[in-house]
Length: 182
Image (cartoon, rainbow, N blue to C red; front, side, top):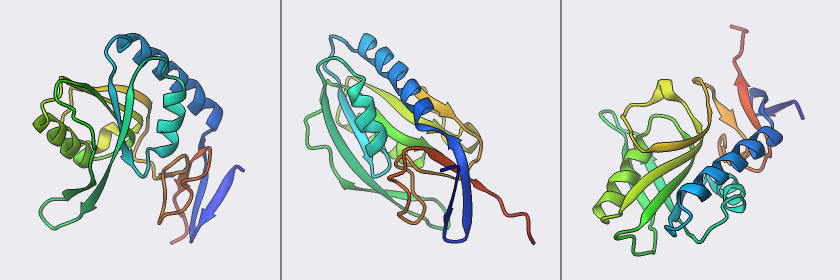
């Protein structure tokens, strides 16, 4: 499938699953080497991370734990507010934590997650993201350690990323083809 349509939007293949798997394998090797004796906790940010997290964990070969958080954004006029819906459920004090994100866009939800984890007195926080849009970041982070692909201001779906709840199940990532008719 090279093109898909959702509602009235058209998308074309952007990153195929083979590329994704290769990059995740390399990320898994790096993480396994760095954290081999540390028993880190991987915290996936739902819903978007579910496919990436599953594939990443298959490439991590060491003792570790896995948990999830689910965040919700409320868009206001002054500032987006993030509300945590589902907590971690593990005592993280003194633990090495790796946040797993599908995509880092503005960084608002990531900032909220990091601040919440810091209040739990974790030993360290690293961020592992499949995609990142550097041009869109509204915050400065020094702990984004693993990034699969840096992309421009693309509107993407597939491999866990959705549009109106659709297309999370696609193995490949597709980008929106802007309309040229006006």
